[in-house]
Image (cartoon, rainbow, N blue to C red; front, side, top):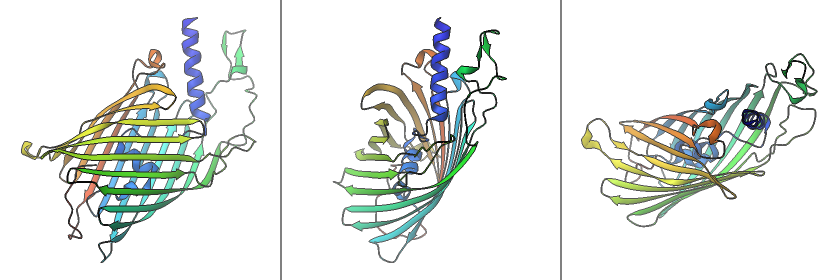
Length: 340
């Protein structure tokens, strides 16, 4: 009975993840997650151009793993006026999850503008995208296919499901706003708010209507110059779509280690993933290493939710690789910061 309960629990979780249209792809590392949900963060770096590659694998311990890859390219378009500039970029995202091989591929654009007023910087951006999704029902078993004669599932029996098709596609739009301010010589704050799936597109493999609900995201990052070569970076991120929510809370410590040789800086971090109405379900431990124009990040999600008895505290492994092209000419005087 114990093994039957565990198997049933895993089946329900995987099944809900495969066909729950209210869930979005997420990343644990701030650099990837913020840019995915809020395009104004794609302008939050010291340089002229930036390329980001992110890869995540999770739930390998309880079944077929969920794999997510993302590529983003950001470009800043400077104007003669130091008060105003445009920024834009491309985004490609590919996700495959579960036994049904639910695959999602998204192509998107990020277009935005920034206005500098004294100690404040205001940003706004729009992100149109085109998404294609598909799944493979072969190899899946459904409750009605349980055959008592053989004591297991029989794929030759009808699954009693009426799929309208295995492929869908739709257009979507996200909008985002950002605010950055230098509070003092030691303190600065960067925040963002965004609305995802503004058009609430139709998304369903079944012969019935199902709209993708709007998602709402808020991020707050503070930068405190603790010592001459050390910065403390408290962080809060909240995202909600329909009845699902996700909160990331924690901090990173950016350390200048140029005296080590080829490494410019390291940035270890610890976050907790939780929700307003539930306990902590994951602890995220990771670090990033800055070497010249490159930044390499790695993190791991340690599952501490009620699923720990099946996952053995295993969660998601995530990698990021960032290339930043420095400014070719000085456009404004700013103190370099290892925020990202």
